[in-house]
Length: 313
Image (cartoon, rainbow, N blue to C red; front, side, top):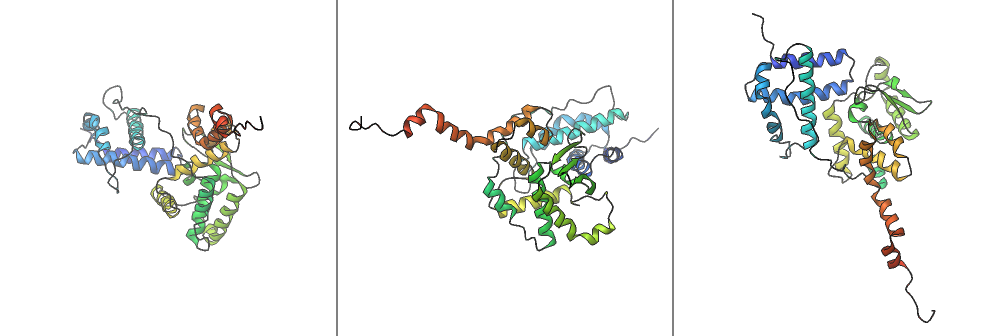
């Protein structure tokens, strides 16, 4: 009788398959981190095989919702959804590999429970103050300034930043090629001269190391957790208690919208398949909306108008 593979073995094989398909290493690491929670669930419920996991799977969403982070707070609904998406992708892979009993995959609800507005973006003064914090006289400070500048200039995702290679930067045209972004689609996005300047300074600082490296080495050889910690550190140092890597993406889109960019250009830059996904960022122009409201709403116009003077009639 053939040996039934255990779930951890299958997860490892699934991740190897993603690498074989040349998925970005950042995406593979993120899938690994998400499925690590599934493996913890299996361990907690003494699940060893896929048939056992299928039977226990209805309890996984509730188990995820009960997980607390290091600050004693539950996992956010968006984070839970990402874990469930990774779980569903794993089951689709199991089906293709013939490791799933029955014809279909278990029902895994990954629908959005709500449509929350993104966190309010950084203002331009806040952003500039934050970017000036790293000590660029040190290697780590220079690296941190460069990666923060790239995140803000390009609006790329965390996993996309970690997947960048030297050959993805076209300095002559000021472009960055994002390979296998969300939905496994490539796209080209602009990068500003300031970000390129800091990126060049960072790469020059590790010239000796770069001489030994290949073109396939990551521009920022970090894992997801390390990058997240770096960004959180600088946000806290700037007095901004809440936020993550995505806040720079949101801020970049917001600032461009406020300065008159057409939302369809923002859609192309962010790599959104649907315009409705980009439109949620439009709420950040609330300051501009407030100015327009004050200038055009009849009640506001009346309140700011010069009072009537009978003597001047």
